[in-house]
Each structure stands twice: as structure tokens, then as C-alpha cells.
Length: 294
Ligand SMILES: NC(=O)c1ccc[n+]([C@@H]2O[C@H](COP(=O)([O-])OP(=O)(O)OC[C@H]3O[C@@H](n4cnc5c(N)ncnc54)[C@H](OP(=O)(O)O)[C@@H]3O)[C@@H](O)[C@H]2O)c1
Image 1 (cartoon, rainbow, N blue to C red):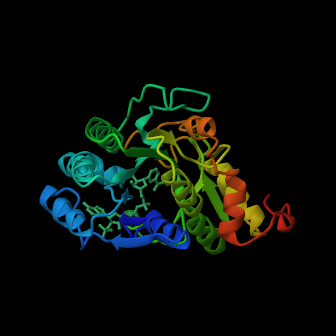
Image 2: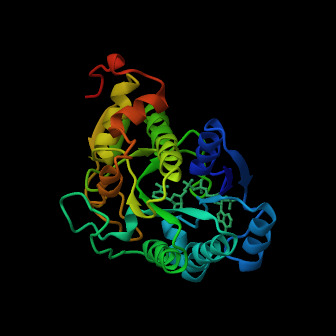
Image 3: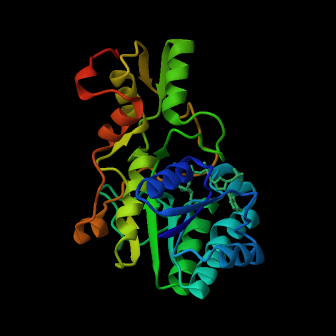
């Protein structure tokens, strides 16, 4: 299958390129310098030239604070950009896989969100991504919308710069010996290679629609940090941060766990528990676990 991947040098995009290539597909990676998704002409000319059967969009403006400061830019990329891709995909007869987010929810639930739960974003980022979902659904039948959560991968996240959460925790532990992490936000850390593998599996079927696509299980950022330190045998004093220690500049959902209901109903859910994705990322096995945090 001829597959175009947008945001191909990003954290998720790099693994998506790898996963489709390993699957034997004919992959055309596109970076921001190759295509501007907020520009309809740029999207139309590039995709018409390449004529892919599948377009995978990982490109987005997703730095939450920057989106709040520049709502027009966030909507231009995340909403109209998604519409531009859906319009051209429809014109050339391509399928679109588009990545969305757990931040379309307000976090008011205490059990995992399913695809049918009503979204209610708290931020410009969440609203712009939700608008992108609506544009895709209204424009193109042949779409897969995948909402994911707290992703991490081997390639750096370009929008956030530098280190992912795992690398940051390990760096802070080494430099300071004590790390303080919030336990008030519950998420599902999801490995980008696991998400990319799920995309390949889904792309072989025609059950188009909206899917939640995260690893199994849930944890607070504090619990995520504890698992990182345990798996890496890192000696560190890990403490729960006080309620006002890291005040969020933009409201975030307190609970954004997603249930992969749609994937499970299809019998296509390839995700494993978040701890196993983390073990793979760290290159350690369960047997290396030792109680080293205190
Ligand atoms: N990070 C998370 O925890 C998280 C959680 C849920 C959902 N998501 C979603 O996951 C997706 C991928 O995130 P990621 O961490 O892989 O992001 P990333 O590392 O920042 O990569 C994003 C890629 O998109 C490109 N891009 C940005 N704006 C573009 C535009 N207007 N036109 C064309 N290309 C553009 C970037 O290029 P430049 O850097 O050169 O601009 C970069 O290659 C996004 O849709 C995000 O909303 C992320």
C-alpha cells in the first residue's frame, strides 16, 4: 500500500514511518518543510502528486500553552488542517488516519471514557482538535480518527522540545536525588511504537470511524514516575508534589483515561498494559524490577 505520513520526523510520525515500512508498505514521509497542512493548496498539490492509498496525519500544533496563546494558529493547523487533509483525501480516494487526543474530554468522569461519551474540551488545544475531528467526520467517509493519550517515543517530541517525561524523570533523579511529581492527573502512558503498530492493524480493514487508542490501564504521573524508577533501579526520593507546586497555566482534565471499546469490538485491539510498553522502551524485562524507590 502507498502510505504518506505527515509529521514524519515527529515523536509519533517516526514510529509510524517505521511500522508501515516494516509491514512492507511503500512509505512517503513528509515533514513540515515538505507540506503545510494549514494551507489547502500545499496539501492538495503534494497529495495529488503522490496519490497515496492511505494518508496518516500525526502533524499538529499541540503545545497546550502555545495553543492558548495563539488560538487562530491552533485552529488553522488542528481544525482547518484536518479539513484540508480530509478534502484532498476524498478527492484522490485515499483513506485518512488522523490522530486526536484525550484532551477532548473535561476529566469529570471517574471511569474510562468511551467513544460515545460527549466531549467537552477545557482548552484551546482540546477544542481545536475536536473541531478537526468534526471536520474529518463531516468531509470524508474513509477515515480512522484515533484518540490517544500521554504518548512517548524514542524520537523527541518536536513541539515540546528536548526530553520526554521518562527522560526528564531520569535526568532529575540523577541531578537532584529527589523528584516531586503530581498525582492529581490520571492518564494512560502510551508508547508511540505500540500506537503505530495499532495503526497498521487498523489500516487493513474498512471499519472506518472514531477509535480510542491507548495502552491498557491507567496511572497518575506520580505512579508513572515510580514505575520508571523501579524498572531502571534508580535510587531516588520520589515525593508527591503539593497541590500548588506546579500550577497549570491551562486547565487540563484530571482524568483522561480512554477505553479502547471500538477496537475491542472489532477484535483488533493490539494494545498491552502501559507497564509493558514502558519496559520495552527502557529495554528492561519484568525480572529486573526491584524495590529501589523510597
Ligand atoms: N504528546 C502527547 O502526549 C499527545 C497526547 C495525545 C495526542 N497527541 C497527538 O499526537 C500527535 C503527534 O504528536 P507528537 O508528540 O508526535 O508531535 P511532534 O513530535 O511535535 O511532531 C509533530 C510533527 O508535525 C509537524 N507539524 C507541525 N505543524 C505542522 C503543520 N502546520 N504542517 C505540517 N506539519 C506540521 C512537526 O514539524 P515541525 O516540528 O518542523 O513544525 C512535527 O514533525 C499530535 O496530533 C498530537 O495532537 C499527543
